[in-house]
Image (cartoon, rainbow, N blue to C red; front, top):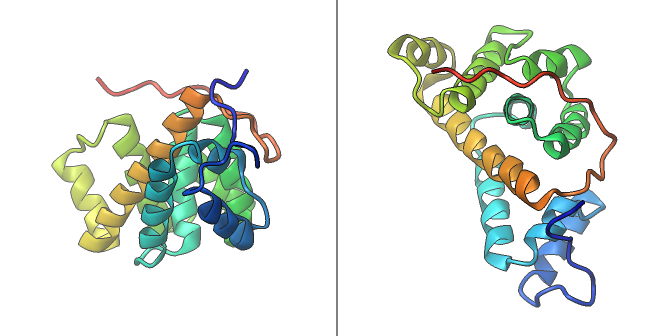
Length: 184
């Protein structure tokens, strides 16, 4: 059962109304996660601002979806996994790329570097080794590494919000795989 219900037309804070209208204009819907954040306009605004900033970066939309899929699976976020399956397809990801990202891998060297780094950041709480950093940097460069970090942080925000709020999944459901064993 949901712990924090999405806002309704009757209880949407005035500061959140234009933000939700912009989301609906862009996506055609207001996802439950956004309507949940709308209780706290600053929280919704923070998500939207960070997503917009990362959207203008070096990583393509599909590459940001790889990060989201890797993080959602690693964090066992059913809501985000379902959402990013849909969004990943919309960004042009193949079924093989989506499946690989969920396992922390990729189908090309660049996808591999992105998904591996994203999974390492989540699993190791950002404490990656020099060798892991060097491998990511070799393919992605400093800007790419930093954008993967930013994208992971954004996705942890969404994953944890959905865990705590127990947001109802309003995308086609996708079964989570077995939880990861965290690094010591």
